[in-house]
Length: 47
Length: 558
Image 1 (tube, each protein chain N blue to C red):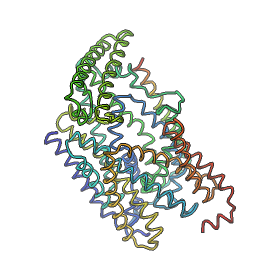
Image 2 (cartoon, rainbow over the protein chains, first blue to last red):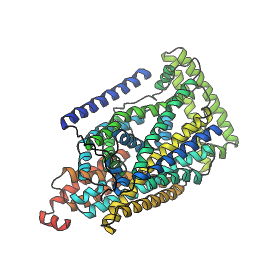
Image 3 (cartoon, helix red, strand yellow):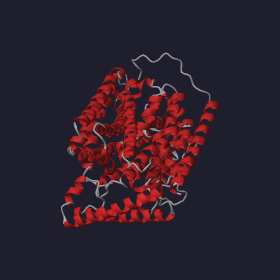
């Protein structure tokens, strides 16, 4: 199914895998920090 | 609702429909109509991913849930960031580079047409019925709150969304999702501000949160490992992880979102947006429910939040007696709350907790009375807490804004689902089995017809779903039967080299059967069905594949 429309002529830039691995680690660390903050929030207001 | 509120709702509806329709010019080709020519920026796709998941019932139901149960529900989302990372590594580059229109299209390349058709068929059935429920749930609530008939709200939501989705395709879905998310966030921000401003002068936000916290309503981490407990850290991190992997990675309504991105990198970034924002966003929504709870510590709440059910019994003598007891229990709790705020010690805290217990028993008596009087044992008014609060206590204009936000949440989910249903119908069935060499124009025209038919079908299901509570249960169960097993098929396809088409096909059926057994013969909570379905599908699929020789596989694939 070919497209009748003009696609963007901008070159597609794909970031390297090494960069993405750093992002994934950042996501996991951020999640752990957020859950910890939520836990601290609960403890603070329920104590 | 006054004139200004109605004006806000009407302006919202007219703008969204116009915004969707003007996308027609980008939808001439099949790739434009179904995949936006793979040209959308990551932030628009990311907001669309979030908008698709945030349905009206999430918005209305979770605020009500926070009012009654507190914030425990947030644990459901703890597995989402990890799921998004796994999907970024696996299916996003995989589907994007495979240049597919649907997730199920890939299964034919890896296995056979039979496996593709079966998975796509299950998707169409579960999602087709599911969209009906997505329309029905807010329609019932809005019909009661706005005083419209259910049919009117069903058609206001269902037909308007079907219309712009049918005309504008995925471009309309995505760009209206972006605006709808703005309406939702802005509306919720205003509500939070207004609720806090309506607290008594001597009660600060910290005091309010201290009240909620003392009753366990701010509990966000439950470390107990109990398969019969719905929301714990483990059910969120493990069981919900499987659900999110399946929903975001194998459900066409979400896969189609990231397939519209400009590149693999933009597709990854779009779904990682949810990884970062989903938990804070859900916290924010639940916090509104908690703040409504705090507000009602100092203002007498309705004894029954559903005004229609309330009206059926409110004239009886027993109801009046229950109402007197309820009012007295509220007064006692209000005094205890103020005493606790003024002097926070163990005694005042214990007195407040005891007063809240008495209040809850009083309300439970009223709810039991409604159940008995109306012969409706499944009566539950949690979903009415937030809308009834908005209509009763929000200022003019803000009510309209929140009703528009509820419409936006419903429409953003429905449009994406209809678009995905139309895409799967067109690509996996019409193009695959009936019109292999069709033109772009034919596929787009069929996609529009499919969107229209699915929209009408969803509205009809919604009309029945409003009267049949059990249908909603059936649809939800059917979805949970399917999701884990579907994930299992994709794990076999992408991660198990030895997997064969016969293994995937029968593995899927075994997985669904295992979930049926688990749901009927165990007490485990539905989130764990996803784990059961996935594991059984992978194990059964692998073992069956071992019985298939390479020569036999070649014969099957042909």
